[in-house]
Amino acid sequence: MTVPPPTTPADPPAVERLRFGYGTNGFANHRLDDALTVLADLGYEGVALTLDHDHLDPYAPGLARRVDAVAHRLAALGLGVVVETGARYLLDPWRKHAPTLLHDEAAGRIDFLERAVRVGADLGAEAVSFWAGVRPGHVPVEVARDRLVAGCATVVAAADRAGVTLGFEPEPGMLVEDIAGWRWLHRALGEPACFGITLDIGHCRCLESATVPDCVRQVAGHLVNVQIDDMRRGVHEHLEFGTGEIDFPPVLRALADGGYRGLVAVELPRHSHAAPTVAARSLDFLRTAARDAGLAAGAPPVPAGTTGAD
Image 1 (tube, rainbow, N blue to C red):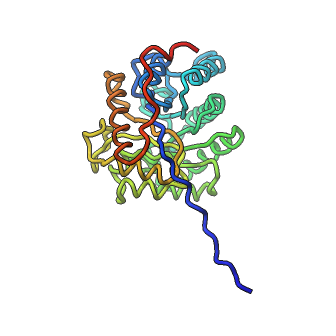
Image 2 (cartoon, rainbow, N blue to C red):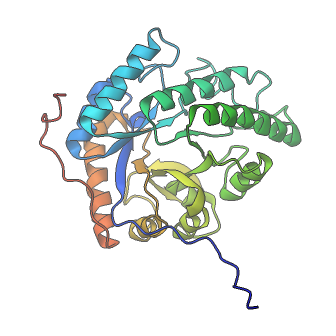
Image 3 (cartoon, rainbow, N blue to C red):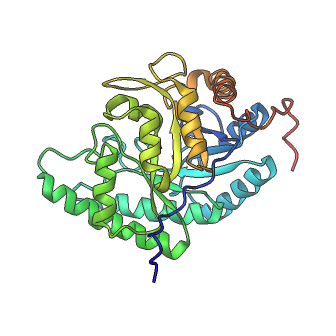
């Protein structure tokens, strides 16, 4: 009897068009509704919504009502959404990003992430993204790793119950800062189906040994969220496109060939002072890069003001 050769999972089919979004942390000086309107008018197809004191604060009164209003607004504007959790001082007015899952008092971070999961479920978010945090100096590495695994397991359980996909982001300088670190954490959690990776394209250039397109290819099977920005080797600074060292057409081609269908959201959190101009310039750049990669260049822009009505 002839034994058939072992089968391997088929590669995901390539896509012909990527969906570009923009992070609301780059619109910190705008009301959320105004930011959504500007981005829809420019022609973006989604937003990476950072829950923060000025943009859908998960601790302010009337959360359910406000989430419902945002969900309706996103639908009216035709915008997809991912939920981001990188607000700097939402949990502690004195310490940036504190507490994290690595701190002695991590309960506040776990509560925030569970709230983010519920918000993500109610918004119909494509993913809820989070990261490890910087290890406090007094916490040994092994203790920090144990805390991270335990905290992530709690968040994974909440996401499973809510039917939400998680995107864990390797972040330079944090306990999990690269793709290898994500793989370790994924294994430590038992490889849950809802636990994917958020890949920041700039971070790949900053610290990964592989080329940026190769980084995309390495995680294509687990990729649930993409942040995109320019960056230089060894410097963790989010730059406008064309001012760093990344060649973007091959990166976009790798995303498309890997079958990625989620948002590719511009991540420029320090550019709120010129948000509409930077967002317009960024989308023009990405559309040109997509065409150079042989991809369709995204949805056409809508004349300003025409998206205001439901």
